[in-house]
Image (cartoon, rainbow, N blue to C red; front, side):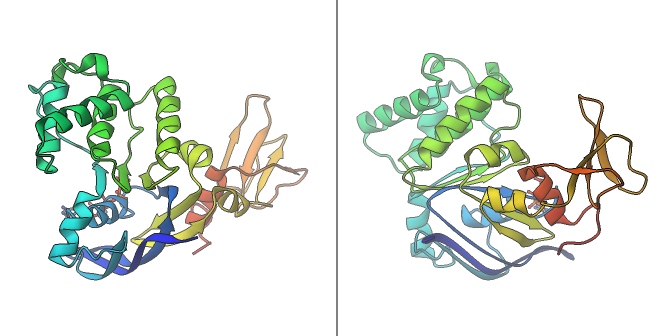
Length: 285
Ligand SMILES: Nc1ncnc2c1ncn2[C@@H]1O[C@H](COP(=O)(O)OP(=O)(O)OP(=O)(O)O)[C@@H](O)[C@H]1O
């Protein structure tokens, strides 16, 4: 893999709370998924890459640029698109006005070109017919698509998406997957999510964060394989395993050591993720 983004020993503290703890990772072109429990530091990493937050220590190189250097930071900003977790759009703007406003902030000075670009990104996310609608009238899913549209302005080489599928219905999620996988064909996309299905469906690589560190980096298949031999199906509820559930066919799916009479099951990305986190098994790191 040719890394387009590399992070070395990144640290960030909020008061006494060490949120990034010497974080080291790298990823290249295509779509990389970022998984991790609440508070793992995912948004803090994304904000550091999007240059909206200065880490306390460590190094970032994104598209060959160092955001700690003022000149390179400006160059990087011109080449990245960022979908933040809570974009906080102006409710009284129309969609067109809002995207145009972001385009102006992104230094698109030529009015005709800017308008063409605004129409292009609205088209890309399927919101062209809503260009004159006010932001406050959009559903949650449409707001997510609008947030993605502004991130696509100027065809960025690096796209940073913070939980973009929150609030999307299944059909919109499918459309979103198709769009993101297409975007990943010729650029670097980092997708923070809690949806392991999205990672399995569209990411070439996956990084798992826990406690401000990367505890796994590899392919979704490798992440699933981390749970091989630790996923079982059995007829009765296991006595000692802490994580199991009754499936639709009335049998029990167990994560952990095999209970008596168990047969092995094929692990999923979600199984691998849970095992890599080391909870509730108390191991792994
Ligand atoms: N501006 C801030 N001031 C103080 N603490 C913060 C700030 N931003 C984040 N934190 C804390 O840093 C930790 C990591 O937060 P972060 O948002 O990076 O995690 P996350 O992995 O994105 O979580 P989630 O999955 O819930 O979005 C949390 O404990 C959070 O409370």
